[in-house]
Length: 357
Ligand code: GLA
Image (cartoon, rainbow, N blue to C red; front, side):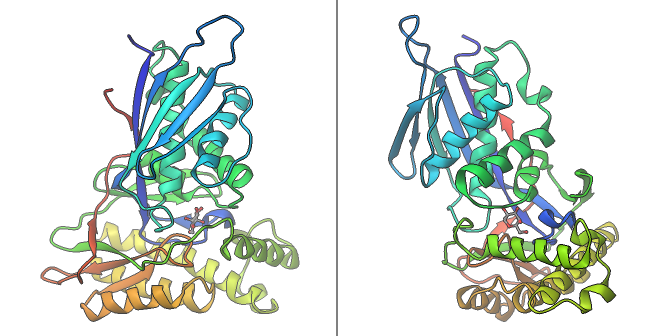
């Protein structure tokens, strides 16, 4: 029966360039990838009137369960915080919800810098909204995807404790085959930019080091940017100029300098993609990595090893992606280039969607 089952897939993302710019009202150029998270849901109506509706969840890859009252999810740790937070934020935003049992599965390792958490939040939103609509509306078409991204960011910020921006969720929600997404976070505009790889290859290589943004240096970096803005008297680093930034105390000067330079690199990358100049993208990836390592200081020895192994394999550009402090690195290879063992090809794919259950 319509409305009793629902299934959704939400992809992870790779950010081609534009790192730590999203919460600074800057620019980024991510794309959705083929791997992601699938959530299947079955409505569990209450047996007796007055009985409390409940949500149960099973994380297949971890072999772990959770269960809580639909009307009153309590804070929890780990993956449970994402599920409870998404249910609570959907309810707070006025989505009609029903009791449900959920099953979560997917091929994205958590903490590997490919946005497993955003993919989980987004897939949960789609299935829960669909179940709650009881099959009466075309949820996937009618949802405001930008509003959904904001809702998911509240889950990260308020339930998980990671003060992340909107990059991952917007990439997962707006992904498109053969296109990177140029996102302007000041106005939340998303524009598709054709990403034609031809015989070139983009690969990700896992550094093997896992991050948890709630406890890594991520929140500290964000706080440093806020402090830099206060000292500069601007609302966001998007409004900062390089002369004023040069006068900031360290390490704020380097943090702000990274953000200003990274926004410029995004614009240059968009121009390079439009000109099919992938060699120029390689140079921009290297420049971004240097800035993330030296100015933003989000690299680690394991990340540096992974970048070095891509470069030794003749990558024309390589850099840490996502929040850093571990996770994956991205490498670009010219035709005929041979990525090292363990590297996985990535290319732009479609965004989050409901799938036949
Ligand atoms: C993580 C966050 C994003 C973004 C990146 C860095 O992926 O979730 O919001 O800040 O780090 O660009």
